[in-house]
Amino acid sequence: MTGTVRLHRVLRAPVERVYRAFTNPHAMAKWSPPDGFYAIYEYLEAKVGGTYKASFTNFTTGDSHSFGGEFKEIVENERIRYIDTFDDPNLPGTMEVTVTFKSVTCGTELTIVQEGIPEVIPVEMCYLGWQESMAALARLVEPEINQ
Image (tube, rainbow, N blue to C red; front, side, top):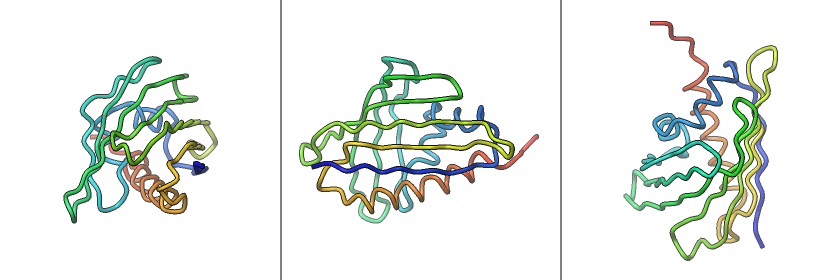
């Protein structure tokens, strides 16, 4: 049995900036880990068939979990679909994440669906982690800094 998380958020930023935050490894390292973790993206090749490798480290304990995947669909400024697999054999299976970007009057409507979450990860904890990541994403993309 696997879990699914669905998220929806409206960000006060143009769709191009929000999309770029999902395709730049430095930006991903800044906003993607949940609170209390930091991320390292070894590589991220944002193109169909491109791959990525990352790890999240718990700042308190120093424990890390690494994962990687492949981009299955990319429509610039509209949609990204990729798969994730954990390196830990205790977290089996493949997750699929679909991110949809839509330009709206006040910025970008963002929809994320993550499917195939391993049974050992409580869906509510995954959802909470995504909420923390979305707050960090907003802090990255919403400021207008023209210097």
